[in-house]
Image (cartoon, rainbow, N blue to C red):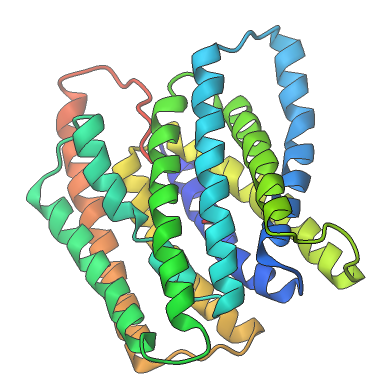
Length: 305
């Protein structure tokens, strides 16, 4: 379990740099995330084939179908999110897309019958309030921030669908095959979106290709492998609030790299988010201790960018 938590923390830190890479790539957002997924899928292909042929594994069609659906959800999330980043800044869409954790908490209760103590909901409310503080600060600022906000909010709904599918799909497939099948589906769907938006696939500078490669290897292959590994050992309702810390890291990286400034409101909202995450972790760990005395430790999947 310690490995799963460490993988989750490092994966969250790496994906926090993703919006900054997209902004710095000097390419349409949907193209940046398309090449991130394409390169990442190629990197994952080798361990996937090795594992498959070595173990002579036959994957259940249900697991492949769920992974494919998860990939389509993720493609929709990433297309809208990256468009929001290019329309505004690296921070705003990343902040609001992480409100997906609220939808995941509700969805996990409705579809997977997960029960949470009052402390969990208070912590999630605190995290939601902290992110709202950050949104309110920039709501009336010009330069496309409202467009980025709306695109990020819509992306968050698809991101929640991805996480809920992952919770179900990881019961059918191990980390590498699930990540591979979902990544391939996401890549294909993003390619379709790029065609529909008439975004060119070629003609970019060496710097842009370096950004694409860094995103594909470090974020898509590296970070999401660690997050998918964690999803196989930690509940969705714990992983998703943990990923709420991503906007804080993203804001700091954007400040250092792109010069996007942090205000007192940003800092205050970030502190509230951290408090909310701590409350969620505390309530979830307490609940898991009680459950260990009642059932065997099956790997329930406890789950943008």
